[in-house]
Image (cartoon, rainbow, N blue to C red):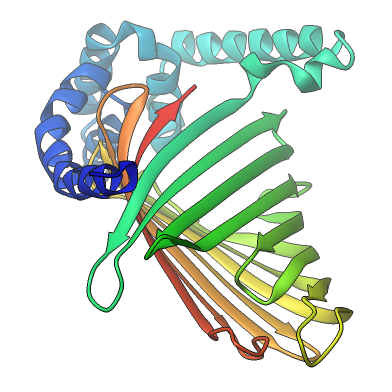
Length: 336
């Protein structure tokens, strides 16, 4: 049995294990973590009923149960009803905020290390696989790295790197790399400015490379403890290098475009999260539609199982390539 066959079998086991892990770990993770999300729901219920006594009891119980989540719980309670918070709690939050600001200032004073320190970036490493049967048998692997960091309350950086490779009948049928970088600036409460950059290297797409640069204005439509939705739109440019063929030489194409995108996240339980990203690019010569959806089931504080599905449509595809492209992945994700 070849390595790729072994990997394909392992991938099938991951698909089964994904749902089992989601069911097994939900209760355990809730008991172990105790996030402020559930507390917010209870406090809101007491607030709607105008029951301050219950509000105070719930808050005190939460603080005693999860002392290491004290500041997060107090912030959640203040968001529900600041007028019901005691002055001692408000003073504690104010002191915590000043401490955070002082720590941020001290970190900035380090110069370039403030931006490069890996301890200040949130990272994820993902490894998974895919397989298909029928007219062809194809086994594949997928890997990804992502990094995110907030620089104060107004700036946020996000980097995503993805690699896919697959083989069918002894030949490589997929070899794709996509790198994305988002820089978000939040000068106002509900409105942000976004710089989006993407580099795509797909050996079997008919393109040597495709580069997108987009500037957008966005807003957060809603945000609750369980779900949030944001959208953004703006102009940009796409540079595509079409591969040489027997009938035409390689050529570089530039087109101006408009890009609209959305990001939706839903917390189904304290351990299972659904996330969906959709985008539409309307260029002067072509239209590209893309949707990426995933379910993640938290196993522990560092490990999660993930099932994702991507679909992409290009209205004008190079000769010999398909307009539609899909990918399904089952992966394990490690947070660091």
